[in-house]
View 1 (cartoon, rainbow, N blue to C red):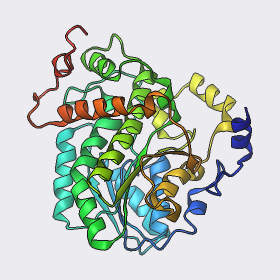
View 2: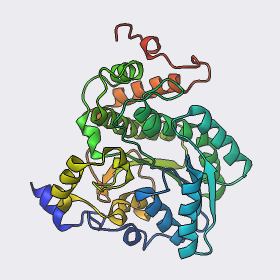
View 3: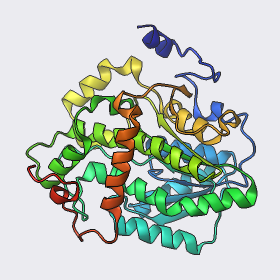
Length: 340
């Protein structure tokens, strides 16, 4: 109850920021970012677009990968109209396709750009069941697996950039408090919904993908520490905000829910604040493997803090993105589950 009251009144935490803080406010004290190159997924609208706008205001060079290149060019044009000196590169990327992820990374490497900051922001909430071209349930493929491979393939560039510049690299995974809604066997469930829609529940699938973001952060932080890489990774809950994420759930019920919850909703500038805080604030140097909400450290679900589950998901993810795996992933046999 006390936490809800603090949220509603915008009470600040140890960071000096709270639920009412905006992305511009939390970056006011950050150093000039003109030497920073950032990749931001899902930057054509909503939280991602505001994150890109604010980082451009702070003079970061932006790479905006998108499935819809027209929307990305429009997002770029909006930023450039406000900040004419912005340097923005638009590139093609469909996170639901592992081939597209690999192609994007290959094309990015041809640009010979450094990479200081990776913001894995793109998200999908699909009401209808669908399977990716790689045989993975679409929400999981887009929200988590594509970002897992993207991060994996870009990591050497980030480590090299940090070593050459002395500037610590940062990875920010955008999750959600909804990750706590998932319980049960993660690998079994992703296998079940990647085979058939009979056990598919859109909310549970979304919660699973967001839990995967949390566990990815936890495991990656440990692995970066083991190799002494000057790169950190943290996870954020942006807060509840009505963005295009809900576009497949438009209707009377959705409208009514958002109306009743309006006092809990954040504006988009407020929702982008925690991402920008994790990406830029000097306070977070050497902070890694943490979960943030309202620009302050927060607790994950019990499952989200389970190191064994994080390691198990990592191993499963490596199988799913392997070039040596079957052309179409078969979850019935990949993890030893034969009775799904």
